[in-house]
Image (tube, rainbow over all chains, first blue to last red):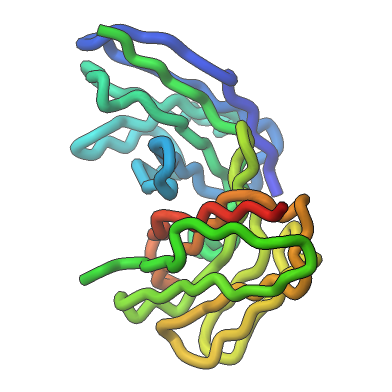
Length: 111
Length: 112
């Protein structure tokens, strides 16, 4: 299973764009990159998933370079409510029953 | 749709006691899993299931049992509680073709 490395914490201000980078040097050919968000006292919530290039949905974008050894979660114009822990996961697309979480990145958004 | 429901939300046990954490989902998901989360850490997989009657061990299975007699329910049993099992427990479910797992609100367990 590919191991991921993320910054432990990041600070931002409301209205800014936030980019969280995840390193996964030994990602396998079949692996997808998935990001989850976790608020205090809640279970994680799926944000976005991708395999290569760029994926965008209503809440975030995911950028994956050609070598797929890293990925960047981009949150546009963050607000206070985006303060949470963000987890980068790498694994088989269908293995949603055995997710491997790292320690994640604590994003603190200030006014 | 209630999603994934966990009960109880909070529980205090004495060392050596046993108990069952309940997890139910109403989305007809084949996959269900149990995770524990210790302070400042990510979630770690305890046990998982790919369907009724089928379970398997995750990363940290010792001290826990599971069974999956129905698609909807996936209880987690603590056989003899230890202080090291103090943690927040999350249950998750997913449809095998989906890209995302849905998590419950968690059970905060304290073993004294």
